[in-house]
Image (cartoon, rainbow, N blue to C red; front, top):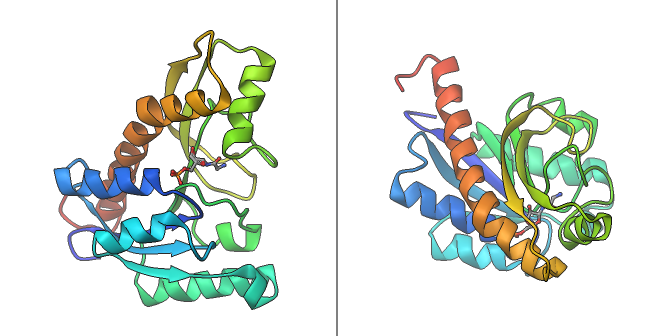
Length: 207
Ligand code: GAR
């Protein structure tokens, strides 16, 4: 950290939320943070290509190769320390982190979830499954939430939320895309900026 919070983004898939963060840093929406590192737990995640194209360092950490959750998380912690990371952003990261991990970074890990928490969240609710559940229940409004990560899956303090209407002909796929476009890609960069500025203030840096 000099005059910006160092950010690591953890990904598993397509990385459209990572792209929203890269674009927001370029456009100045994220003013007080700098994406330093992208870590993927999936070897061929397209998010890695997005990171490389933006000139961001990448790392792949595979639980299968490391043999245990402890070793997997230790490797991530080593990378975070080596890159002097101040803020960890889970952007489509499809692996639940243990309480041992999350308790090391209180209010320094944020996650984007594709529903209005506390609806359709917690263990088993991720990606398309969240939108399938919302359509099956028949809610008329859904959205996205950015929250701090603690030991309870999707249970940390809420930072930002944005509602999105469900349309009569929605499929899980159309709904997923609209929730991303109208909510996730907007509130995730905003939350990253808010928390980055706060981290600098807490460290006594000029904001
Ligand atoms: C996003 O919709 C994100 O909210 C969701 O996975 C998608 C990842 O897309 N995350 C979760 O469900 C976490 N519980 P992306 O890789 O294109 O950003």
